[in-house]
Image (cartoon, rainbow, N blue to C red; front, side, top):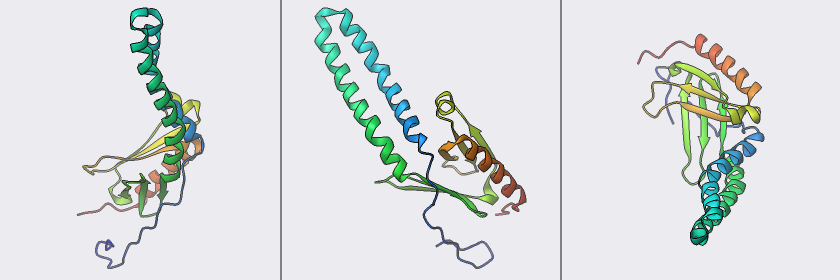
Length: 170
C-alpha cells in the first residue's frame, strides 16, 4: 500500500466504481464492424468480379466477416463489464482488462493537461473520451466511452481540482 508523501497516512484504492455509458457497446461494435469491412468488402467485390478466383476470394471474405461479426457481438459486452473509472480528490484511476488487468492511476498533483476528444463515431453515439496527461512514461490515462455531457463535466471538474492541488515537488 503506498504511503502518502510526508503525511504518514496510508492511501487505499478500491476498485473504481463508475462504468462507461451503455452506448459505448454500440460504439465499439461499430468500430469493429468498420475494421472488419475494410478487408471483407474488397475481397467480396473482387470475388464477384473475378470468376476464376471467386472461391479463393469469397472464402476468406466469409471467414473474416464471420469472425469480425462474432467479435463485434461478444467483445464489446466483455469490455463494458471490465472497464471502470473513478475520480477522487486525490487521483484519477482507470481499470481495464480481464485476464491482464491494468490499473492506471494519475495523482492530481501530477496532471499536466485534460483533453476531451469526440471523433465522428463518438459524436454519432453522443460519447467522448477524456484524456488525462501526466509526465508518466506509460502515457496518458484515457477514459473512453463517456456520455459527452459527463465527459465535459469531468474535464471541468478535473481542471478545477488540479488547479487547487499543490504540485508535487519530488
